[in-house]
Amino acid sequence: MTLSIASWNINSVRFRIGIVEQFLREQSPDILCLQETKVIDADFPSSAFRALGYDHVIVHGQRMHHGVAIVSRVPLVEDDRLDWQANGEARHVGVRLPNGLRLENVYVPAGGDVPDREVNPKFGQKLDFVERMTRWSETLDVPTVLTGDFNIAPLPEDVWSHKALLDVVSHTPIEVEALDRLQKAHDWVDLGRKFHPAPARLHTWWSYRAKDWAASDRGRRLDHMWASPPVAEKAVSHRVCEPCRSWLKPSDHVPIVTEFDI
Image (cartoon, rainbow, N blue to C red; front, side):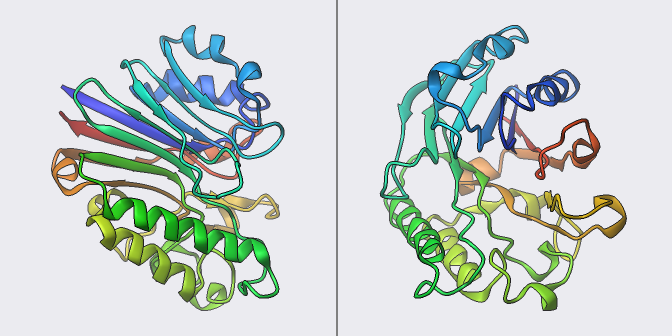
């Protein structure tokens, strides 16, 4: 059977439920991981997902900020909520599928504007968050998919201009090095680059500040899907749903979708 997993930083699930429904109708993934839902658990629009056949809804919400969720046509068990931020923010939810596969949905902090933890505590929190994920990855012993908004574009080809963004949070060397350590901690396979090797253009985020995001095309690849090596071997495709950036009331991120032959 084929299992498709999607990930999308939706930047308020209630405000953008219309395009979420449109995406599910058009792309029909088996599982959708959402980040930045910005809603408490009791107010999550579960009925809209169940109306489309996504009967399994796991949410970890927070009022007005952060928040993650997994909606699925496939049964889900073992709801984990790891506090990699170490302050109670809702930035992770993990589940296990019936076949034993683990799925971890994460929203890494953006890190503020200044890439210096001494003057910008948010940047330090981001680095510490990734370090906690690294320690967790070192002990991981089950087949796993790790996906979400990592808020780091690691490769020079993952941004519109490597030179222009070297000092911009999300593409600084210290962040890239931290993400590289995380990847090596479990031999994670970057599925985006497995199917679209560099130097192929592969962006998932475009700022709201651009008057015409498509014309300027100043994108970054902030959204990722990684897999344990045995799981990565079963991946058959990976796509970035770029047209979603032009939909009504869009998020600044677009969905990514990976299909597995499991």
